[in-house]
Amino acid sequence: MKCPFCSHEDSRVLDSRSLKESIRRRRQCLGCNARFTTYERMESRALYVSKKDGRREEFNREKLATGLRKACEKRPLPTGTMEKIVDDIESELFHLGRAEVSSSLIGDKVMERLKDLDEVAFIRFASVCRQFSDIHSLKQAVDGLIKSNARKRNRESQLPLMDGVESERKAGIPA
Image 1 (cartoon, helix red, strand yellow):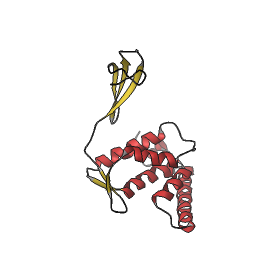
Image 2: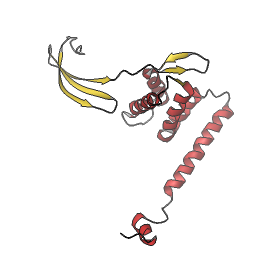
Image 3: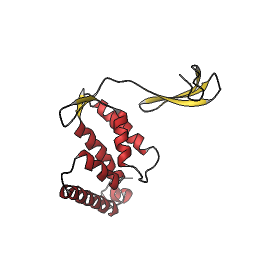
Image 4: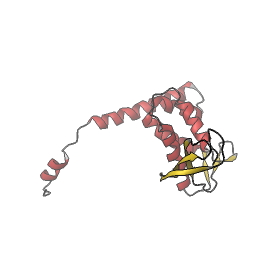
């Protein structure tokens, strides 16, 4: 492993931790004694993406991250949110067990997450992904988002009919 500070070729591993889909290693350079972290990810079989125009290309995690970053640019999102979304989508795609997925499936998975995370980022991503032909189709997407979020807020603001303990007692379930 090449040191990012002095480019020395040798380092030693101080600590290793398994993460969900990768391994985090804390390393120390044997040349300058600087410490740095590396992440190792298991290389899995090739996954291809079929594009709308019929082309096929290998899945590129960085391309997904770039599109997500553009949509979320200058939005107040917690640190690491976009990386988590990319990790989750990549994991889901590989767990599908297919050799090829459509670009629209990937776009739908991103929009599904952005819809709950940030409305502006959702519209930005959807405008590129769905290639709105005119202002009316964009307005329909915005109206759909507003209705969806209104229903969600309405459900969240409602109180349950009975709380857990009270409902069990009234139903005759012994405590």
